[in-house]
Structure formats: structure tokens, C-alpha cells
Length: 306
Image (cartoon, rainbow, N blue to C red; front, side):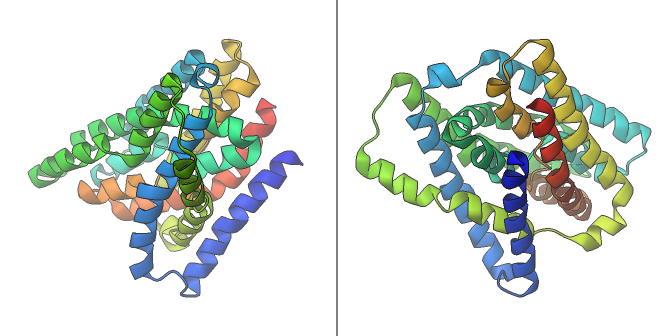
């Protein structure tokens, strides 16, 4: 019941975002600016404040981090091999592999962690997310560069790589880790300002995820999207959970990491597919399908872990 009371409200807000888009509350002219506001300001403010208010020394678990990163790397190679065996089209190959390991940590993963585990869980997850995002983006650049369609797309990868170095979520996580490690006290004025700004992060992020779903594209890309979704929200968290248990990690320590691994494909898969002239329609289908299916798989993995 505790899992249902976390997952159902989250996906109810996602469904509300989809309905709002259909009813015209989220026009195309609104989506871009709203997404940038959440991505560049609200989510980083939430992550930075959460880590700063926690104790890095007690919230950071190297064993959990190592397993989490190893799981992401393993599924990257499995997805690449699966794409070759399934003869995925070259234009789809980059988004296919990326969607199989690149999770939506900032918008959905952290939301599930926060609403299920509270502030303590959010601190642990935010620390993990900073490192996982660095790895995810590195692997994404590698696979998209390999399957770049032409020289122009390959050159655009340089601008993508530069953008990754300035990823606001990664910067916020690393800055928060530094503040927490050095035990720097945050001024009350700054803390309250960040609290107000971060308050809009998760609700707005969930609404935007819902508004970006496309059932039409899922029907046209069903097989490849199903395979990529299985790898992302099935194999990846399953592999991570197995490693956590084998290493004897405590559930309270690894559950934030497991939830991040179980997050559906990131919206950045679509953005990078556009940059690299890949199949952007497939990216949308993959993101939409994995997001919808994750309502069930989140419940499954959390229940199994507990």
C-alpha cells in the first residue's frame, strides 16, 4: 500500500500533464520555456539545497555508487549488442542504445525517491545522480558519435559535449557535495529562496513529462521501443538489485540507487537525437513507452527491494 500511495499520485500528475496538453493548457510556445525553467533553475536548486542540508559523510556510500555505475555500464554494452542482433536501423541505433541506459533522473527518478523516502532518501539519491549523470552523458556521447549520420552531425556532437560539461544538474550536485563535505553553513535568506524555487521543481517536471507523451509514435515504433524499454526499466534495475544484494548492501542505502536505475528513458535522448540527426520520432516513442510502463515497474522493484 505504501508503494501505491507513492506511485499513483506521481503518475496521476503525469496523466494530468498529458490531459492539459490535449486541452490546450500547454501550447508548444509554453513547453520550451517551462522546461528550461525547471531544468536550469528549479531542479538544480532542489538538488543543491538537499545535498547541502544533508551530511555527505553519512549519505555517501561508495559501494552503492560503484554498483550503480557498473550496472549502467553493463547495460550500455548489452543494449548495443541487442541493437546489432535485432538489426536496428542506423538512424535509430544511437537513440535506441541511449534510451536503454540513460534514465530520467532529474524529473522522475528524484520525484519517486522524494515522495517515497523523504528528505534523507533525496539527499542520497541526489549525490548518486550527480555521478550517474556524468557516466550516462559520457556513454551517450560515445554511442551517438559512433552512429553519427554525417560529418555535420559529428561536429554538432562537440557542442553537445560542451553542454554536458555545463549540465546544471551535475553542477548543482557537485557544488552541493562540496558545500556538504566542507560543512559550509548556508545563509537563511539563500536557503529560504532555494526552498521556494525548488518547491516548483517536481510538480512542474511531472506535468511536463505528461505533456510530452505521444501514443501515436509508440504504435509506429513498438518493437524497438519495447526492447529498449525492457532493457531500461527491466534489466537495468534488476541487474543493479542483484549486485546490491550480492554485495550485502543495506536496503536503506541502496533503495535510492535502485529507484534511479528504474527511472524511464530521459527526455535528453530526444534532444541529443535531434542534435545528431538521429531518429527523433523513435526517441519520443521510447521515452513515452518507458515512462508509461515505469508506473508498474517502479512498484515492482520497490516492493521486491523492501
